Amino acid sequence: MSPDHPPGLDLDRLRALLERERPGLVAGPLTGRLIEGGRSNLTYEIGDGTGRWVVRRPPLGHVLATAHDMKREHRVISALHPTSVPVPRPVLLCEDEQVLGSPFYIMEFVEGTPYRTAAELAPIGAERTRGALLSLVDTLVELHAVDPAEVGLADFGRPEGFLDRQLRRWGKQLDASRSRDLAGIDELHAALGRELPSSPAPAVVHGDYRLDNVLIGTDDRIKAILDWEMSTLGDPLTDLGLLVMYSVPLELPNSPISTTASAAGHPSPAELIERYAARSGRDVSAVSWYTAFAWFKLAVILEGIHYRYTLGQTVGRGFDRIGELVPVFIEHGLTTLQEG
Image (tube, one colour):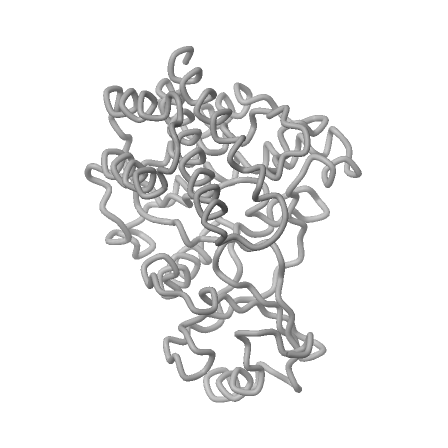
C-alpha cells in the first residue's frame, strides 16, 4: 500500500460514493493518510487538494460490532452539531460494507491541536495551558447542559441503573483479564459497589473526555470534541470523574502512559471540580466516588493490556511496563475513596 492508499481506505470507491451522495463536494482525485493516535477506531484524513475531510471506520478485522458502532458515533455528532457543543460537521454515514469493508462515516476536517503530554504543552506556556484546561471544563458543562430529548437523543442510552451496570461491566472485564494477584482491586470494586451514589438527571456522556480527545485552536479554545465511541445517555459526573483522574500528576519515570497533569499551569483537580460545579450548578459532593471509579476503570483497562502482553498479543513498545502501573492506579482509587 502506498502512503496515499493506507490499508482500510479505498479512495476510488470513496470518491465514487461521494460523487453519488454529495455531488459537487469533491473537486478532484482523493489522497488519504492514517491519523495516528486513535484508541481503537481508525481515523483517516482525506483531501482533494482544496477540501479536507475525516473518515472514521472500525479497526481492520474487527468483530465486536457494538464496540465500533459507526452509526452511533455519527448520530451523536449529527445531534450535537446544531448546538453550542463543538463537534465536526457530519458529511455522510455509509453502512454499505462493499465500499470500505465495514460501515464508516465522513465528517469535516477541523484545524486544531490534540495535546497528549506535558511536553507538548510546554511550548504554549503555563498561562495558555491553564486557559485550555479551563476551556475543557467549560465545554464539558456545555455538553452536559444539552437536553437529550431536544436534540433527538432521548433513546441514546439507558440511564436507569447506569452506575450499577458500569460497575458490573468493568468487574466482568477484570475477571476476563485475571492472570495474577492484584492487591486491593477486589477491595476497591466492592467499596465502589457499597457506596454507589445517586445519579443526577441523565445527560449525554462522552465516556472518554480528556485533553487529548479534543482539538485546541490557536485561541486556546476547543474547536472540536473527538472520539465519541463511548458516548451514551447516563450519569454526567462519570465524565467529570475521569477528567479529574487525568488531572492528578503521576510521578512514573519512563511510563508508557502519558498525561498532561504535570504541565506548568495545569489547574489542580480541586479547581477543575469547583469550576464545573459553579458553571453547571450540579452537586459534586460525591465526586471522589466518580474519580475512584475512573481509577478502577483504568486499572482494569491496563490489566487487560498487560494480560494480552503476557499472551504475546501486543505489538509495539512500552507494553512490557504496563503491568507495573496497575497497582499505582488501584492505590490511587482506594486512597481517593477513603480520603474523599
